[in-house]
Length: 205
Image (tube, rainbow, N blue to C red; front, side, top):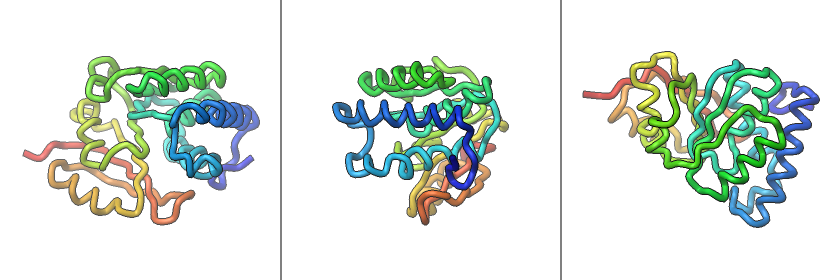
């Protein structure tokens, strides 16, 4: 099996397939993603989320903000299961979605834990991390604000955020409040979309 042109092991494929089946079952009663995208689950969500680990395929510690239906955090955690190292802290305040996430982690043996708390409270519960991810959560300026507690003073911590075609406007707005290094990874799934890699964050005086 290949996702985004990269080979996926049989073990990871089986975990992803089990997650997809669970997702489809739970999505009948919980609004995990937009209903219009359910028929294209593998392309729109699983392959798209897989790009995060494919960009940063090391056994590191992640914080995934607003994990929702598990994208990208659970997908990253499934890939980490093959490495038998690394961890994802999934932050999701909605208790029904958090219950789904816990079930998905348990049944796929993915390397993650669920924090059913507000994002603003997460830095006091979750210690240092190596990377932060988020998908379809907020504009870049807001995402950086959520991430600042982990990023400021830790030049090795980086963020990987999915963004759509309007991403340049979001970058310009964020630069009005923050200084940061930026890498743009073109999406292998959605034309005109990117994954923005933010590092070396500083707050403007």
